[in-house]
Length: 503
Image (tube, rainbow, N blue to C red; front, side):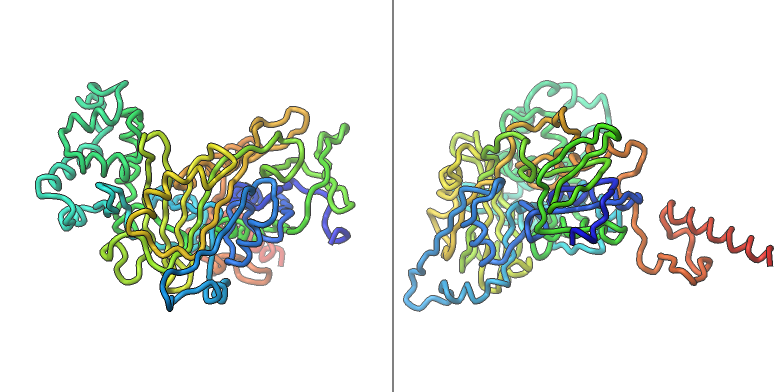
């Protein structure tokens, strides 16, 4: 492979995580020569998804950005259980276990980017079935749409009216710059605004925990932005504002890698970079890999792939559980369940975690089993201890039948600043967030530094829009093409006309 690989590239991207894949696809799309390499044998890095066997093997290994891994099999209490360890392992390849589970706002950055760039043709999503909250130690579905508000049995008629009035006020916020609420609560907290609306405790919990997803110290302006983001994504693809990638979140980096490859990007897995230096005469980057020296104008690197990016520290603590029964009531899991989302707070209200339940309808596990994902910012190198306050809330009463539990830590470098000695663009590690906004913002920022005047991921043509040598370009619908391909089509038409004149 080293003999066949070109030696010069416009961009070398190290690591195939979500952010790196976005950057590689963006550069390849505008005509840059891109080499995308990863020392792992799989795409996605810490954004990947695995079968059950592969996931367990990964936890047994010691990797720089994935550590403190452990897993435990739990014997079923039933005398003749429907699922045993052996039966679960037989279905290992039916699992798609995420290292970084996320959802996407229906009108958020990810969905907008996928549609704009036409990468959406590579992806498939499922609407999240329920956004939940814990109230009086019970798991309750939060009414999202107008019909949900009036059909729910968890709210009284008065509470339904109060909630609709509050959400309408939040949705209208910002239209009038002289809005009385905007002036009155400027510099105060969103929770103070909520109290001023005289809503009940149940509605306050619903808004703070599941809709605005904020803390008592969140500012009024930020709380309003969160609420409007929630409301702005309602009704686009389902009753809730969230989407989950079918077959696991590890599919998304591969969607961007696919686009990069379509436009000429070269991929090398199981290949690492041994050293990076700067050529004194050209200021190009020289990368040593497998006994070969590669030259690149720019290098983008994920954390942990090249030495010298600072010591790694615990960043996110993760828990993953496989159960033979779902969490919550039958109403929350009609027809075998779907995708349920829950935000948790500890007793002091200082720490939070996101919980996600996936059924076989998400394409991530066999029918009859459920996957539980639990994620929180790391406080220590012991992920089980970091998550103990939240597992206690979830599994102490009416606990599901847990068959398998696993814990691990996602690490991040302590030094996140770009090195002044070597001009490498370092991507940020996965942030503690429910969606992909920080990752996409990081990709846009790095791309803009390298290619200031270029558009980030312009629309890619559909296969039927591509002109192949020997075809008649005029047979295409010119208005359906992206601007850059429209210009190429115009040049081809002019060239054809000149050939006719010459003849």
